[in-house]
Amino acid sequence: MDDSPSALLRLLIPKLPFIAKTALWHSLWLSPTSSKWDLRTEITVRIIRSLLDNPKPTPLLEQQRWSVKDPGIKGKMWISKVTLAKPEEEDIRNILTEAIDSMDGGRGTYTVPAIVPVEAEWTGHRANVRHDRPRLDLSEVQHYEKLMAEVTSPVTILYLHGGVYYMMDPCSHRIPTSRLAHLSNGRCLSIRYRLAPQNPFPHALLDAFQAYLSLMYPPPDSFHEPVSASNIVFAGDSAGGNLSLALVQLILQINRSCTRKNMLFHRRTIDLPIPVPAGLAGCCPWADISRCMPSVITNAQWDYLPAPMTNDAVSRFPHDAIWPTDPPRGDVFCDLSMLCHPLVSPLAAKDWTGSCPMWLGYGEEMLADEGKAVASLAAKQGVTVIWEQFEAMPHCFPMIFDQLPASRKYNKDWADFCGTIASDTVGEGGAKLETKGIWFAVKTCKETNVNVMSLAVCSQEEVEERMRRTKEASMKGDEGEAKILPKL
Image (cartoon, rainbow, N blue to C red; front, side, top):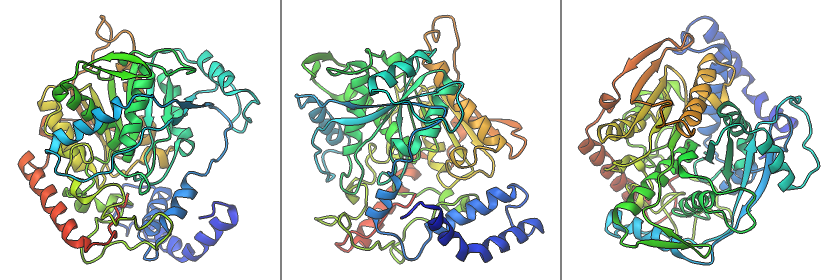
């Protein structure tokens, strides 16, 4: 995949008749979405949808390489590239696998990951420069010092990027992470977790867990000082939202089931239980890898995501160096036996008791019902949940349509939650957050309150049954060959 101007032209020129037809139908109010979307939104969503529904998909490795291509660093952002050293001890991996097995009785199949150094980018806002200002020629530690000189809050956001678990990178998310850092007055640590299919579940989860511990207990030669869990927020979009939810569930499960009193990390004894972070802020989290909830069909007109895979129409990707896997696997991210595991699909989690407060923001998108189920269950179990949903908006819309009033409102509220929940004043006579739900009307952003505990469109029993049936259908359709791709 080439991202040059000539390649963009080659992509768009064949679609000019399609674009013209879309514009005409929108202008004549013949499109079913013309009353909700402006012309730019309509054309963009339809082009993205047509690309994702391509009957001749691009090989996975080519998609992956294109998505992690570094666009460079310039403008209103400080970036300091770091590597979080791997611990000599294996405790973090052992505790992870114990938690995985304890949640499903060890019935699922997964690859035990190696512990490796985790690359990451410290990201902050660079004030008073033009958008095209080049990056200064400084060492990485000097860039970190410049970044910290502009941070005015103790907020540290552990950011986990989206990209279906097989695409994207911290470099692809520098604009949203620098914006989040700016609006929250804090900083982001955006990690380069290992991507599937080369590194299936739970590789990314181990990397995220290691990064969280590294924030609180810095490895040797780290740029940062120890960060209190009360100043850390997990944040992520789409698959990164999934990973954020899974990381919280992992910590909760370790604290519920682990019989150890402590663990070793870089020759340091860490007492258990592991502290939960100050909060979780998810942008359209992909909570259900199986994609079994009703909104994947009922909300399709407002979204660009493809329909879920079926046994009759599975997505067949060309063979390349990374696909299919050896031995074959029925899903890019995980073995099909793990589809309903709570650390793979947090929708399957039955217990959020003790979780940090959550902010969950969605459009009227195909993934909305899974988010509603998570929010509703967590709120019923005593977790503070702030739910925001925006009418007629597609998946991860604030990252694609940042000019829309809905996107500006979304980004402000997302950052405000991070800045509030991880500030030193929470619980000390300062701000206190309470569970609430808001529906935002398209264009006007007029607010309507909704009951978070009543959001779920299915009972927990029905959710479990839907996931079970989808898993069984996927396993029957696998036919011993890795063919089914979770397309997001």
